[in-house]
Length: 280
Image 1 (cartoon, rainbow, N blue to C red):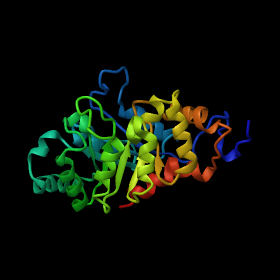
Image 2: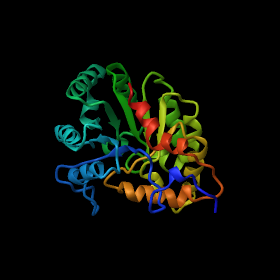
Image 3: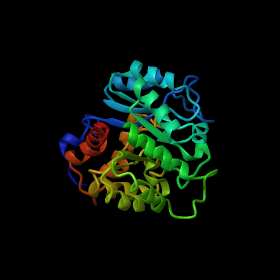
Image 4: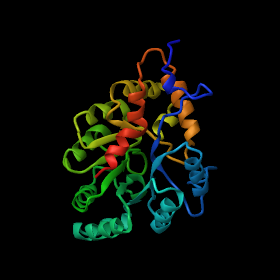
């Protein structure tokens, strides 16, 4: 097995990044997490910061959440937490001025970005509503996060997901866009699209962990080596913990003999890329 750079290793010989900017985390007032046994508890998340596992994070409210709680939780957990709210389906009944007014209100409270969640609102990414959302976000000065897990009730799209998202993103060259979960099963094709979009960051949260035992982990490793300035990764807490993520990256990517990684590349993926992305 190849000799790894000592700066990539932890004392236990398990990878731990020098600094970690978690691309997406969640908390819930009642802590329950969508019919699973996971708990979106903000005290647990706060402990990850205190223990040095996370340095910064984007805390994203989900549709239907109390965004005041999201904002208060961000302040409670760490000054290095960036709060983001999600678009509510009912907001899409209004015009663009209505959306701009809502977005300005949330921005004035301290939110930095807004998230599109097609499955939770019932509108596929190809729906015209989302163009209005992106235009409003660009006008107000928020960055945009897009969930790329397209399945029921917003599937099939009638075209490939990477084509749909490329068509969407290229319309808004002055808007910072993070494609959450990497295009899901369409990861490799999505990565080729992102190469040509200077304003877009491809996030591998959830997807890498879900498919780590599949060929998608090989694709993720290839992107770690060849696209380190355009990708990010996170826990999607409470989907997994930082330690679980680091351990899986170590096992399925860093330990491979057929890819070349450097501390600089890993620093880009785990911290630098998001840190630059957030600088609006």
